[in-house]
Amino acid sequence: MKNKILLVLTILFGLMMVNAGLNKFFNYMPMPEDMPEETMKIFGAFMTIKWLMPLVALGEIVGGVLIAIPKTRALGAIVIFPITVGIVVHHLTHDPAGVGMGLVLLIINIWVIAENKDKYMYMLK
Image (tube, rainbow, N blue to C red):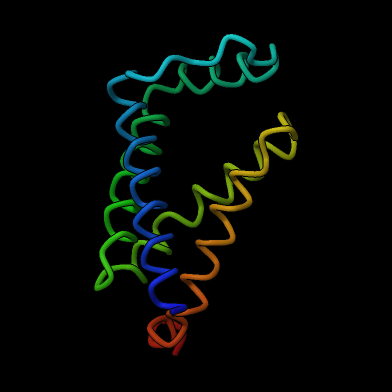
């Protein structure tokens, strides 16, 4: 049962990350109208660094695809981990009201890493 729950969660997680990454390239989801001024300034600053958002988008797409596929899930969890930490840290510091979904994604990511810890041990030896 635990494996089925993890499978469903990682597929949804992966689809959310792929969607977020594709949106950074194609801008098909409009920005919310009620975004705080500080958040708008931050995203404006991110946009001035021309390579940053495409890099994050690429990480989201690659990590999302990898984490959704059971055979590559361990690699995908490591690829996407810095992005989920960044989501949580951003919301904790600039938009605490939106931290809930970021925490859910981080918890799923940590769960996947914990379930695959034996695959990472070779890197630590």
